[in-house]
Image (spheres, one colour):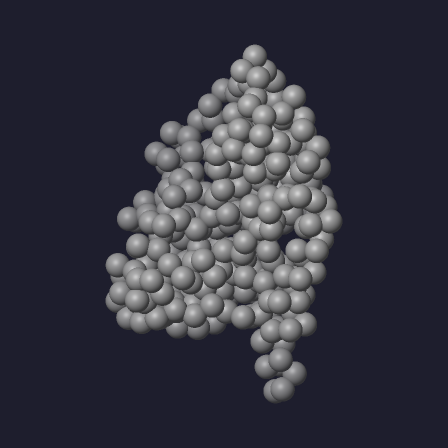
Length: 318
């Protein structure tokens, strides 16, 4: 069957959700046991990192197996039917729920043990602690809300307990993924940083006078480019991670692309998305630069890592 051939080609793992999970053949993001990045079944495929999506026939052709799936088997590996998670409750009471998260005991300590966030940043971005609503996970998580026009449209939760083996980041059922985090803060003349992680965006705004925006791991959307352009920023800095999906430096790219080719022979090389995003702004005549990771930077380093390194250097020099 074509689905089996694709799974073999991508060295994919069939998980409990009845979907195959693998390294993304489009951006190269590595599969992780506890996270969903790229997955597929007979219904099609989707990557939460680069946004690549399509039907299984397209994926078969891309992976060098141009075989049309058998319509008699289109449900064999698809996600099991589930009762829809109740999203109305948290949407109607989102502010009340968030207030309970923000007032949770040891909330600030929990966030600061995860990242070096100031009390002001924790309060400004309404960070909290609690059980993520409309989620399969009942463990307490670091809670991050996403606002759109003063309304909460998404709750994201990050595992922080050492014995929590569930996915690191989850979101409440019904959360919107088309909203640009901090997009409501954009204004004329702002210095805008585009990064990959919610907390990295908060750290960037904590450290400098900028507006840091992110899709939170979702593929960058054209409408977000338009949203930033329309706000008339003074400049844009695209600062993605040092990996194949982001904007790797030459040494990282060479090493990771060799590993990708070895693991997935015959597949096209994935293309980093940092240069593509920067080009979109350049074509719109917006002053833009692409952050270049210096030589010696470890693979998968992100903006938060860079901020931590800079702060360590300041302490050492003091």
